[in-house]
Amino acid sequence: MSRKPSFFERLTGNVRADDEENIDEEEENDEDETNQDTPETDGQLSVDMYQTDKTIVIKAMIAGVRIDDLDIDISREMVVIKGRREEAEGIAHGDYFFQELYWGSFIRTLSLPEEIEVEEAEASEKHGLLTITLPKIDKTKKSKLKVKSVS
Image 1: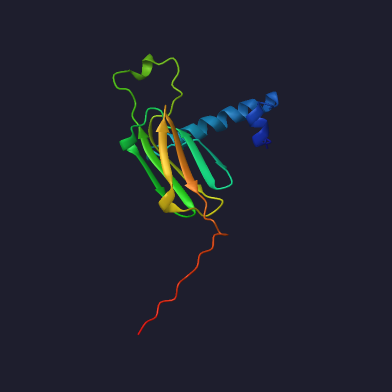
Image 2: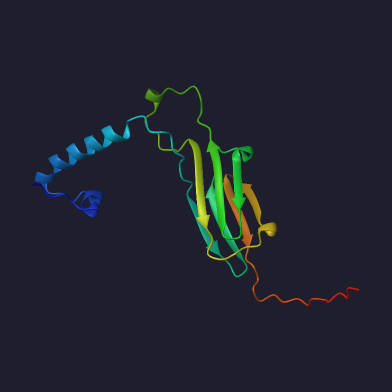
């Protein structure tokens, strides 16, 4: 019975020579299973999310995405960014030396660490960088409520 290397061993390449043959066979089997008419899945958009005293800010590189192909849904606790990056046509797959950029549909769902004011949210794009600014709900904010006389 062969010992299966740990995830860390496989990730770092720290595998004993006698295990390499078994790993190669496992990877070939995994590739065969994944190439079987699986439906196309959406890619995932990489983001940075941070907070200031009054806002939560989300930044994502969307170079190559038309603004019309971008859809941002927000609620008090969540943001969903969907879009599509169209691949340049006319380039044969065999003509690429490298093809590392993601082309096609993408989606990213982010749970927010605090509730936000949905109506005051803003999004902008400059040089391919999407910036979404989400004002936090001010839980310390107080207001006076007038009582109406109803006859």
